[in-house]
Length: 255
Ligand code: NI
Image 1: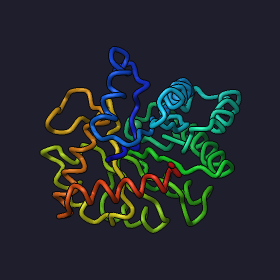
Image 2: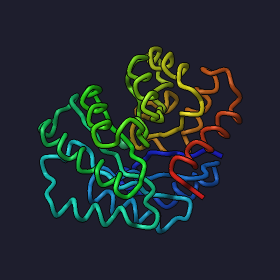
Image 3: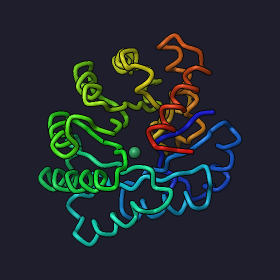
């Protein structure tokens, strides 16, 4: 059994067949799904999904792209949503200097606020970071201290950045983009991640594996990722499944 620790089944891409797809993933060997909120509305929808399906959990978060739009009221609503029974993390939150959709000052302000809330609630954090390595680590350390109960989602850094993330106790997760033909560099990084600090995610509907490139991704495709990691690390598929499932269960405190 595998766990998809990061997907967005609340997105409209799944409107036509959400129910069938969720039921099917369970039959295809997905033990748990963490549906990750990337807006206030998305977080509410994620929680609704977690209440409907017992093997689905939710994360309460807001993407840095939304940082210009958020106000004090929204933050209070987030704080209440974090108390929902099946919310197991705060995220995705972080910084995105690649697309720079919201101002960097607002991104940093929102990131600090959400980290503070996660710390107060004792929840782990799911971090989105694109081209913002220095600020991301600096703010993480500033709010969380030297030991961060968090995961660097869709890891996109090099070996040095990996060392720094591991050094503050973080987990690392990769998406199916490691199966892309041109992902040689990323596969080199995968090789260096200790298996006890690794778990799996699809980021569906985005980043479908090479076999379905350009199409909609879904939780069941996390097996392509597990197969690729097994190949890269010279382990069996079963071993990758077993260890990453244990890691994810302990990180998200799943039953
Ligand atoms: Ni995501």
